[in-house]
Length: 256
Image 1: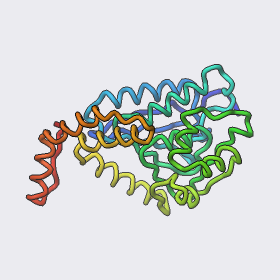
Image 2: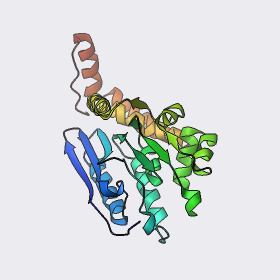
Image 3: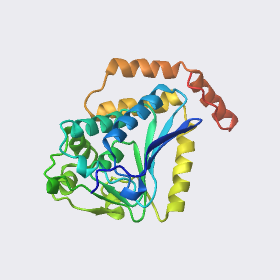
Image 4: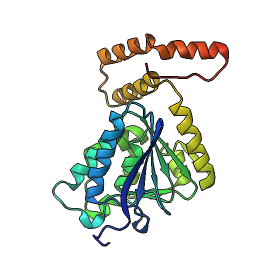
């Protein structure tokens, strides 16, 4: 595989409460170059710092979602550590995250998607991690995500056997949250849930996301959880939510 980057670097676009990161190297299945890792980390920092953003989607142009890190650049002293840092930052991102999957999802890209809160896919999607065939020992954060989210047996099939999972198998093992029959249906589903999640009360929505992830890692901060519950209980949003329920209308949440 050529080490010369093709296509364009990832792009961040923000529209109201929804941000979208698009991978833009379709000629090489949206593989990630070293510079892309740094740029994506910067995008996550930008998104985390913008309190208006409640939902972050990651999508890929062309036939495939992403083929992972450029194999020709493997072996660098910090390549694995930088990729792990990106995946961990994505898992800890403040907004609710959705990976929109199609075609191939390979190598480290499988972990980037697994680091998201939700994964939506279309028929024809598949995952494969050839790490053992390449002599690459997958990094700690990725192995932990595979085991905690999919279970040890599935993690071993994917990481040790390099077994390829088609869309049906991805749905059955819990890798996919939703599977649609065609790209058009996938786009409609993604748009629906992006808008629905963006319309929810951010103190409750994003607070629960944060603490659910901490619980999954065995790192629950009970004092922090109590503070966030108290803030949500005292918020204008809770009063607005109750009023909208009584008036049978859509609530207008402000995050306060």
